Image 1 (tube, rainbow, N blue to C red):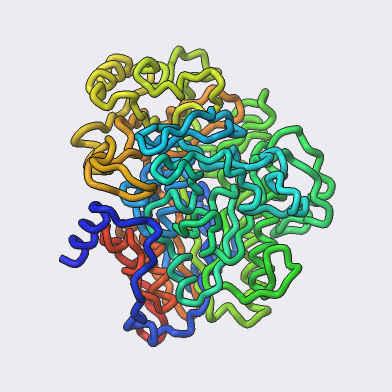
Image 2: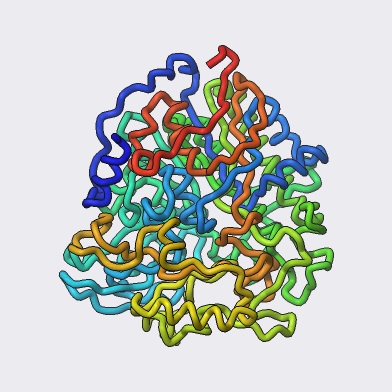
Amino acid sequence: MIKKLAAAALLLGLVATTLPSPLRADEDHDRHSHIKHVLLLSIDGMHAVDYANCVASNTCPNLAALGKTGVHYTRTTTSRPSDSFPGLMALVTGGSPRTVGAYYDVAYDRVLAPPAVTTGNGLPSGPCNMGAINGTQTEYEEGNEIDQSKLNGGFSGYSTIDGGVQSIDPNKLVRDPFNNCKPVYSWNFIRTNTIFGVIHSNGGYTAWSDKHAAYAAVSGPTGTNQPSNVDDYYSPEVNSLQIPLPGIKTAALNPSASVDCGQLVPNGDDWTTGFDSIKCYDQLKVNAVVNWINGKTHLGDHKAPVPAIFGMNFQAVSVGEKLISPKSATRTDANSGGYEDAQGTPRPKMLAEIQFVDAAIGQMVSALKANGLLDSTTIIVTAKHGQSPIDPNRFFPIPGSTGNNGQPPSAIIASLLPAVYNDPNNGLGLAEDDISQIWLADSGRTAEAVADLENAASTIGLGQIYYGASLSNLFNTPGVPNQPGPCCKLREGGDPRTPDIVVIPNVGVVYTGGLKKQSEHGGYAWDDTNVMLLVSNPALKAETVNSFVETAQVAPTILKLLGLDPEALDAVRVEGTPVLPAIQFNDGH
């Protein structure tokens, strides 16, 4: 009954900026009160089978060592859609997009208004009609920054390798017509609080490092232009142009595999377009984590408390899975990443990315040991999303270089989309990776759009369509609230962020016209959603759990480990998200 009442309260207008209710100490925490810190690591793209394969082949010794004192979950599913933004939000809120309101970095809101200035990725500016329903595509990625071509996001007060929320240009943020057309920062865009908010409000020091300034959304709502629930946020921009990084060398299991990033030769593109460059990029964040463990701020230039919750995301494995380099190469060339077969045997370039990440985690573990913190720290290793397809024989790009005549769903129903999607200056396009999420100009024409897509099934590589009743089992009913008001409440009536249609293509279909990728993420396929999950501490009983769990369960588990009430999280109360099972310390609790 309590959970039902909480859910009703949210639906009737729980304001996202509401402070969490007073916390009670977790009743069981005295049984494992030695846990003072949680290190959360997302190896983006790391499937459960990747972890199993590297442990079995003795190619990731540090992850294998963590597994010897850890609980390993083999059937873990990410958020759906399985993209970075909703995937990250699941990890830190305990909720799904229907509650948190985060569907994709680039999505749509039927109430909010366009930015005042066109974003770096081309989301067009437009008017904000105050006190009225507007409607705009939304963007929370590098396009919000002052200068996305720079590692520091273009903020002049940052050093070359720094990065953070000061690089966000508020004029490139979507606006709230029911709040004086003020810009909506990513941390206020989400509808629920986060573990960072709960821990910070209880006196815990918090830190996180991620790939975009906008991912300071981990703070959760603050009602201000600062993500104040994160005490130290570090976000060198992953889609900035490559530059040499003097003094930076990448972690490696063998010294000969280390990359001297000061000798990096930029290719004129971003960090995700090179197997070595992405290691150099990730190493910046690894160094930040080690600095936090050593009691310093992210660049190591000031003293700071060791965080109660801290961590980062790795990009290296995701890049290793999908990158074809150079563009003229084929997927079977030695320079290509990805897999050899359907059982997930990594090709050499991809294996090197996994081993880099493993060595980097080894650096973190060594720092914890050196500071006497390993016993008091629980390490959680998982992923925001997987990548599809694993089987290289299933890859089928639409449109692509294979001579097929396919088209993405957005091309089939272009006339039914909001005008912003057909703006020739809009460089964002629809949310189409290995999924297509569709917001229509008129939700009343959903059946017409579905019929058009069904008739073009072979053209779009159609697997399944969700709309109407089948969609409402996953998300809230699409539409607009009965009584619109300030962002970002979930009010009675339609949800302005729910897509009208979700297209799930056949396994292996990727809606891309590029020549650099051989897989993508975002969809609902097993390869997209089944990721590794490992919870490790020297006092934990090693166990393998084969029952289904979700990455959303990480958030309440973190609070419980730190002695805080998991139900302090809004999404946990609303959705009933449980803590992860089978976490037993050697004292029997």
